[in-house]
Amino acid sequence: MQEKAADPHPLSDLAYDWITLIQNKAQALMAYDQYIKDAEAAKSPECAAFFRKVHDADKAQLAEAKQHLVAVLQGKMGAGSK
Image (cartoon, rainbow, N blue to C red; front, side, top):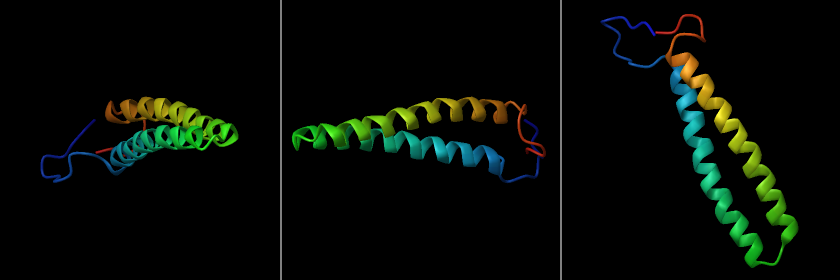
């Protein structure tokens, strides 16, 4: 990753976007855990199953997003990165 000495921003916009997405996905995963518990407490296996499905999809997306972030930070992805 190349940075200009006078550039006040240590991250490119693209890197920041990936970090923000990762943070949001991580927070969502924690929320889904609570939603699953709530659905189980309400004796609603259908709702719990749906929350697990959403949880698993976000978990997979989070893993992929981390790979993209690494590539961006290494300068392997994203033209014009700072």
